[in-house]
Image (cartoon, rainbow, N blue to C red; front, side, top):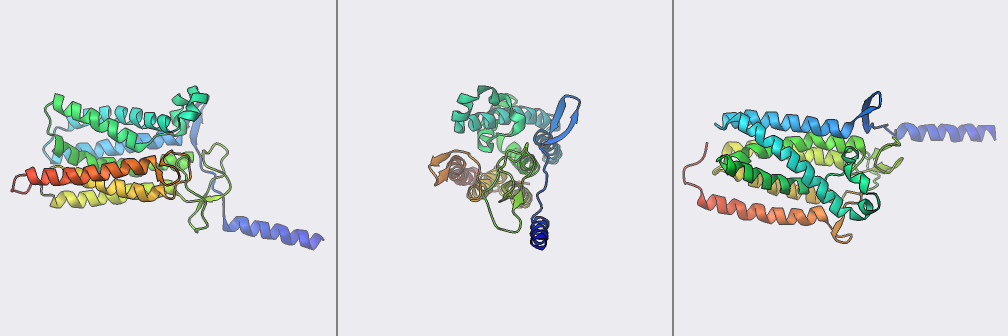
Length: 281
């Protein structure tokens, strides 16, 4: 019996060694009663990286870097408000029962498409008010947005939100921290990392497209097309509650993604048709 028990313990240790459970940290560190959350820190890092790249890139395009910085701050506020509002709408049942949770943004709960729609509306108003060129500015901001997404999605990873479905694939991630928003002690698709890689790939593709673009707005349209396709695919691997336009068939984000994909195509050909024959620099 003692031998059998030892064998069982060795077997359990072997399984544990094969599938370690990383203790991801939703809370980065604490200073007294103040907690610095990984999610918020990642969003801040994403914003700083995006605004720095946009300012540098805009200067090369002959745009006022300070105007870009100002615009980015407005976009940041609009994106947070819009993405949070859409998340609340999609998960309204939870917030009807727990209204104070609306304010707990540090726990995750942002839907990118809500932020994108709100940010675009605010950006257009700002550009018109300050008489700035719409499409050249959009081409500058698109790669910066993809870069920000690449970094910001790591906040989702550490917080455990936007988690994936259970998987037996070798790269499945196991959450073990009790503060995590993801299901614990089971291998899940690392959809947060998928989304981060999606943003990184789009970032480099947009930089390549910008070098060969034929008209202003081409880079932004390419972003809409690339992101909507990538997000549509990643949604199939998501396991969190995020709302469905068609129950268990088409998620809310996939539905919005289809709309943005069609918008991107129509906008692409409209801008291409109205562009001057001379290629833009």
